[in-house]
Length: 58
Image (cartoon, rainbow, N blue to C red; front, side, top):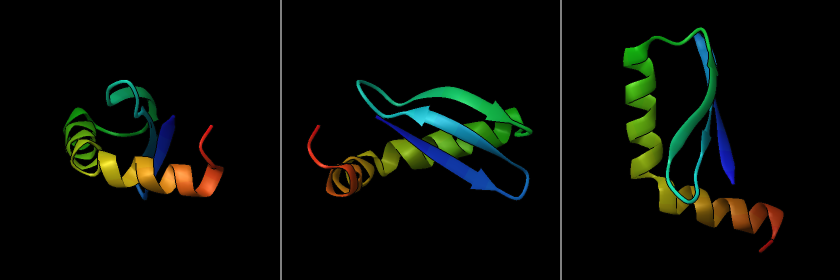
């Protein structure tokens, strides 16, 4: 399970399970990646819930 994050400066892909981990990124600074990682970590439960709702319980 993963989530894509896109902003004006670039984009990133984070694995959500088993732990939140950066998979790839383009044009983002280390500082931006740390900030995005924290947001994804803080909202992990919501992301998982919505992912399962959208894609079904695979």
